[in-house]
Image (tube, rainbow, N blue to C red; front, top):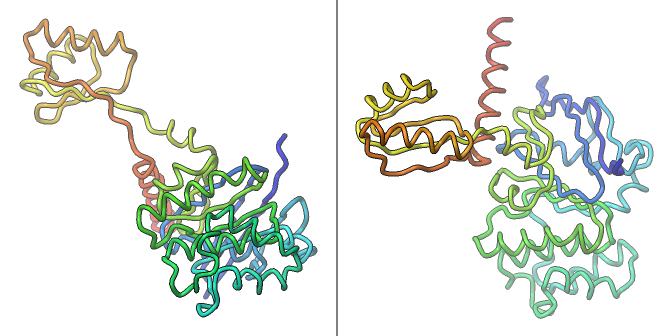
Length: 312
């Protein structure tokens, strides 16, 4: 079994008698890139602040590297690097000088500065004042700061927030390279589902403080059954004829929809339409996006929450 790096049990944080984090059970294994997904206000940053010891849980427990965070916080956090919300810098100093200030606090060798600058591809700009950096460069410097102490666990809160497409691509490729090159485990929070889809191996979805899904992205995608859509002539008449053949289909204007079957089943359906003189203009498979699955999951959770509150 893979080593568990982060494990929470019944994690709760209450503000003004409201659970903003509600019994969250995170399980993150060594070497994973774990995508922590949810809309703004869902409880992602609050959870991360508790994982970093910046905020005390109302109840529940946090274990990192198999140790209780409450009992061994300093020992654990020496092996954790983080970038939470917008990183802060000394704008009048250059990138190297900013890292040197942090290096003295962390008491790591000076050679680490060159190493992390190379990792985040800032070596050529290390002597430029940070006030001249683009937003993407500042984010990369923030990640360099998080990497300075050679962490085993890297926690990044919305690292691509506010970046242009080029900056997002840079950060994404950097994050993807870290587990394989350096053996790190990464927790990355985001509301950009398409970005997490391209980076993460595992995913947890939080909605209104509750973890409503936790598994691999592959299994998340498999939750959505693909459908076959055919553009035909006279959709309603084609539907009635196919139903008489025993096919389970639906129609909307000149489109016929059916759940995805084998190639032979789809071929048989098309053959039946042609036999009955219905023109078939297009056949395509429709797959739901990760965003669509996410919306379905959060919608279901909200409906269940509303239903239970109405019943009470």
